[in-house]
Image (cartoon, rainbow over all chains, first blue to last red):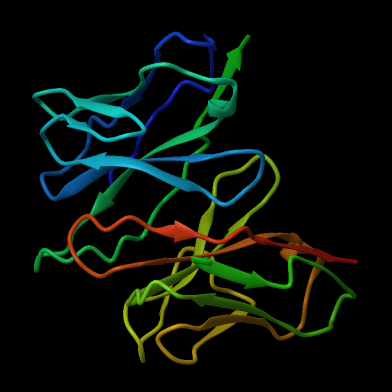
Length: 115
Length: 113
């Protein structure tokens, strides 16, 4: 599984966009990039995932570079409730195209949103 | 819609005692997982069950056993608890298939004295 590297912490002002980077330079062609977050020791919450195209949902946008070696999670209008640890994870898909979805969590990025 | 339900939420054990952590999901998911999270660390996979009737070891399986009781339920057993197993335990479930995200329970906080 590809190793991901994230900054240990970031700050963001409320209402501004939060851009969280992730480096996954050893990612292989059969690995998705997933983002989860964990608020206040609750169970992790799925945010978004992608393979090579940029993705957007109601929570966030995911920008993956063309070479797939890095990605950025964008929270367009951060709120205080977005303060959490954000995890970027490379998830392998087996040869048959079915993901067992095993997640390997690193230390993540602690995002603090300030008023 | 309850999602993933874990019981109990908190437990204190003495070294050597045994205990089973329960997990149930109501989303008709095929795959289920058990993780542990130690203070200041990310989650680590203990065991997983890709589908009913199958279980496999994850990253840190020593000291644990699991049972996939049926499609809904996946339990984690500590046969002889040790202080090193003090942790927060999370259960998760997902559909099988490409790109399916995992849904997590709220965790069981386990202290072993």
